[in-house]
Image (cartoon, rainbow, N blue to C red; front, side):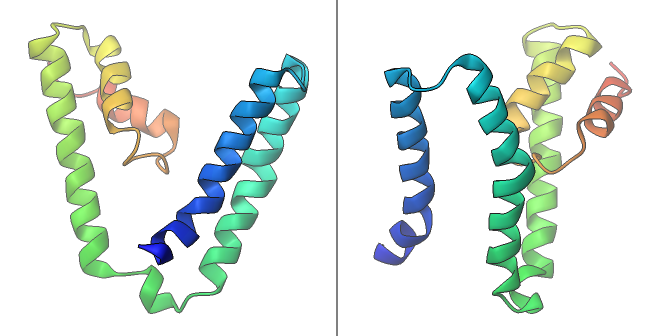
Length: 124
């Protein structure tokens, strides 16, 4: 358990610190836009590169895990779209947003235009 907290703890501390700084009003809205760009374009890729560069390739590219992850993602997309179309009775364009919201945790690495194209072109 302590190993997991050691890995995830710094991320949660950074999130809490960001929340506290924002609530305290230490940065303006324009400042937050610049800090957000820095995090997305510099800090996060650097953190991922650092984490991945310290592992063997066999630990990173795990075939069975990637297969199950991909199948789970596709199942989530299909169920989300079916629910949006039939349960919520939304048009195909609005379904894209519903599916995106329910599957976002599993498909954050898909390029957004590709995701929107794929989902909007599914038959009703």
